[in-house]
Image (cartoon, rainbow, N blue to C red; front, side):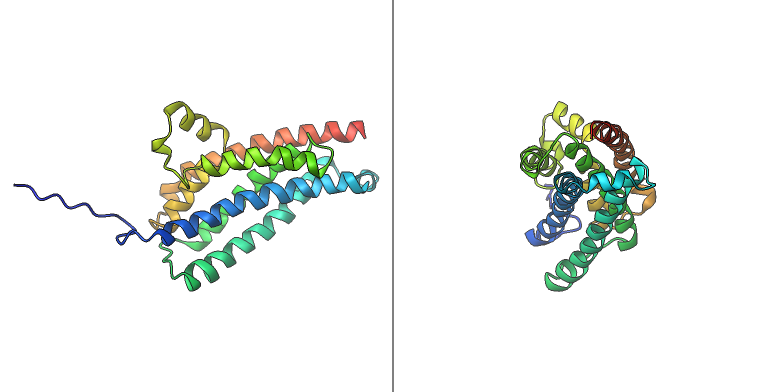
Length: 217
């Protein structure tokens, strides 16, 4: 007779808080970056201060980058504090991988999501419109990222669509590889490259749309 013993890797006691706490940090990074970057541009338009930027010696690309980097820096610092203070110290969840590698990937991811937020903001003229546009996008990015339900349980066409269009599945795979399994750059570089390339596409589209908005103003 064969005695089969099933063992869970990286979480042998199947502690829910080990998985849920880290995934909540990932979801918060996505949600806050998307909202803050888009809201920064919307508030400029609502208060009329975007006209002041037009008379300054700055290019549209510099305006967009300033919104992305300013909000992205805040999110990266907040994510680091959450992982160290809340996840590691308060909840006693072990972090197996390199924190600098995770933060470097998070910085690239915030650029991607902030570019998407700027792109959505160019289709809105008020915070109300932006909120209605962001809510369904945010729900899809969080629920279908693989952080709540495994990508393997989704239909093949849906999984493939999310991996191509949305950056969140690649970021969740990257974060799980680094934080849970202690993976290095040699293992997670495909996911890192994927959401970085998607960020380049979103940034180009947001810059194109933003230039159109400035031309109308």
